[in-house]
Image (cartoon, rainbow, N blue to C red):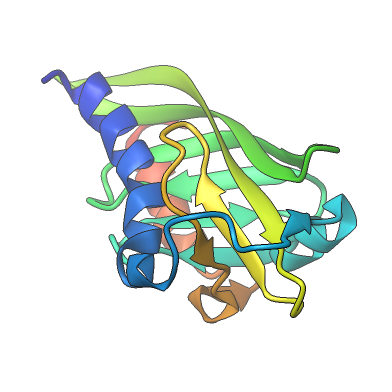
Length: 160
């Protein structure tokens, strides 16, 4: 597997790993759940850093800026994030990593779908793979760009 494919695989696996600790909670869309309001989704993420179980990070800037770090801390993603009218949180990112003494890059897009259960609980799933539904975990997020210095260090090493 090339490093490029490894990066994309790592990014895709991040979504799966988010749900790994809670996959036993549900494997189907919660009964009676409806698409989550786009403004609610934006409020869940805007200005926060998601810290994934795998060791990766994503910063969802309040102006739509997206910055990601892969789980190995060797690659960064730079792009934008947005919420669709269909209740999806998406990012369009260019990922950069070192390979054979050069900085390589590749575009990548991913989305998560959100629904709200009748009891108000927000559920999500990773769309590219249509993983199982899992509860949104706000405890996996912190306010601000918590991984900024790590991101800047990696980006600088890549000549960005």
